[in-house]
Length: 504
Image 1 (cartoon, helix red, strand yellow):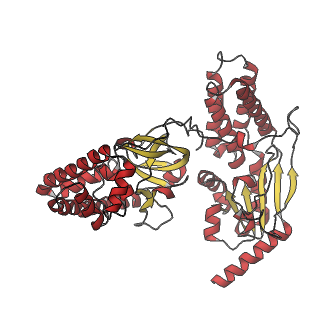
Image 2 (tube, one colour; image 1 turned 60 degrees about the vertical axis):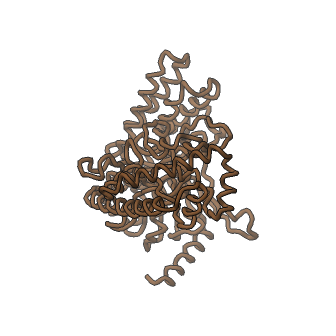
Image 3 (cartoon, rainbow, N blue to C red; image 1 turned 120 degrees about the vertical axis):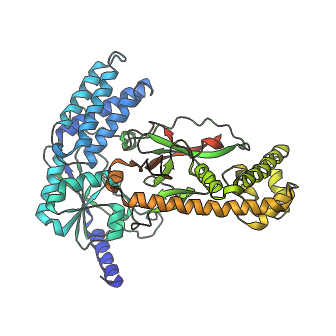
């Protein structure tokens, strides 16, 4: 299809959705409604008692509730739902004797058991809808990559195509109908304000109360802005447990959330051996402290084989980004040692020179205030003076700009040669070591079953291969809203952390 034809089709789809609105199909789910009511009761108890004691049970219950909304496949092909159901019952059992509200625990465990042994009614409606329209004439849109994989495995025999919202936008299949699994709030506004298909239907359990349609971010400011309306249809038994009808709820309270705690760092400038970092929760119960430095190695699964191992800017890391990390160490530390090895007999001299100018810089930064040091360096012609603290890191070769490095050495009263030449030699060796590692990584990735990574969110590379040993690929699942001051050697080193265990 030509670009003009594709553009005309997008305009026609937007016009159709703008005129007709979108369908919201609320499917009766008595077992899910019972669980939803039990979760509401649990959150009420937490508000009364405070967090801490309830944290794991709340996380497990929210995760189970979320899977009911986004993964409606039959229980026989829904291990995620079964696992979540079992986890709720396990966490409820752990609290017996620790709280006086045994009835709440009993009801939550019974509700979890009920949804863990019965097929979600939402799945039957989705399957029927796909078959009525025809698998070749529609697409299914999943709320996340794991949900997409699960629904794809279930619907594979029908021939139905399942996309995430991002994939739908990129691939733009030539069909008129999209069945979106989940409430509108789980998706970006572009799914309805700039639709790929001329008909959009959201399928969700009837007990999920928030059915608001996302609007364009500029709609509130634009005169005559188009606001997409929703047409509600219901299926099945939409009754809910007594006492819950009409009770308002804040949906944000019911979604799985990471546990960040409170900020511990004081409001101060980091020291020479410290960095400002933001905690990033990773798949596989891992986390890293990601500093605001330069790039970090990542894996782009949308690129063709041979081009999937990439560098991404630190500020571009988002939930869903796949990072390549070395357990127990930073990649920069490993590459530094590899670069010294490439220099052979010159390696010790290079290492000695690097330590000398970096130690001199660290001493100078301690002698004068950091703001004063930046002012003096800028006066000397160092354009990137604000990186002075980062240059004390042993794994950063030297300032990128030659003139900056020369001016820095003069400011430190260090002769430009041989330090300048040795550092430049090390930088070239570092580039070669990085390229060698990239080639090894690309080979390991090309031989791997990446569906495992997409399904599980993390994957350990071939630990027997030299250069790749200890590397893991893992998906970022949440990023802390605040920063901390941490020791430089702790940044970018993955460590075990279960704060995001309920988000996957």
